[in-house]
Image 1 (cartoon, rainbow, N blue to C red):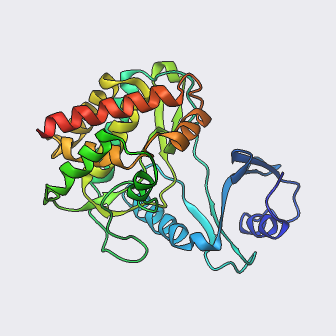
Image 2: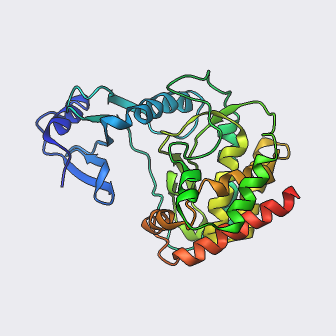
Length: 304
């Protein structure tokens, strides 16, 4: 399986590889994003999305430019068709590749979670971009999914109801806005080296949910993912790594933990598929649901 021929020709032309016999490999369930390998050894990544996802594609390009300008480990944009000129109905972004992989088959060691926390601090150190259509204000992770509507459509879960009611009674913390990734979890990071030893964090990808928001958005998202992946100690390691890199205590941690837990499906159904697709086949839906709920209970307790 390969991308459409028109997109193949466009990508190869951007790489000065027109006419070459390139190899393509789908990086997610056999499809986009695609890894392009040229006979001479050059590589690139081609992401193809439907035209209806134009806002997210525009955000991805704008966020990658900002992240790269501040020294964050992100792919460099080589070419972008954000209007469907190459293939009507589809948009495309071509980027450089980064070493490493997001796959891991067992709970990573604490060192990896500390490194994740440090990366969240590095992203938060970037000043907030001006709020715009390309980089909107963000109030939580995965902002294109209406998790509240999903909760209303599902059987009521008292813990989630309590969390919603708690946040409704609180004003969001007044803090300076920063640059946020908007979907920061292990599956959107790349690592080089043996996972059992932690490895080296080589990249952060999938910036189509980026924008301007509170630092706690990314920190809470990482902590929730870490707890679901490996338990309480992993979430604590993320916080420790963040605070060590930032040089100060993180603010409003319990509040943003609750926000992060509510930015998950009510029963963690499709999150389970995404996590297992990254290699964690040892985790099933009941385990992940129990851990998400334990994370949320702990956060609500700390909020009082």
